[in-house]
Image 1 (spheres, rainbow, N blue to C red):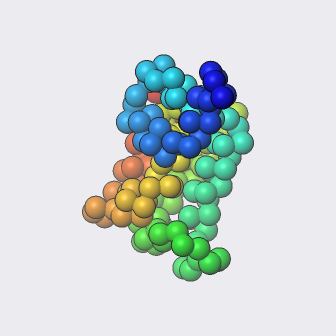
Image 2: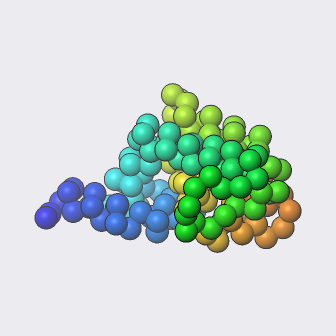
Length: 142
């Protein structure tokens, strides 16, 4: 496999690390693997899937229990409820038809997937809300 197909597969296999780099603000053109990953993250289907993940986190926090068996790290209910409005705003922006910056989408997706993120391991009260606001701010920066 050569060329674009190889880079695209590499972007999927190394997605978590590439998302972290994009979330930190690295430009997609800085590495041949970042550009296809950025396009993948900005795809409407991926944006909606990320929004659905955030909405599920809020729904589980509201219900007070998880609705299915999973090995995923549970999000601290109190932190999610504190950040609920910001999370729902983030989900709505991800589902919107307007353009968003890849850094903000990468931040939102990476928080969902990283068990050490502010979603699952907040360092202090309100840390999740701050992290979600950072993802919202980063989506607006073009």
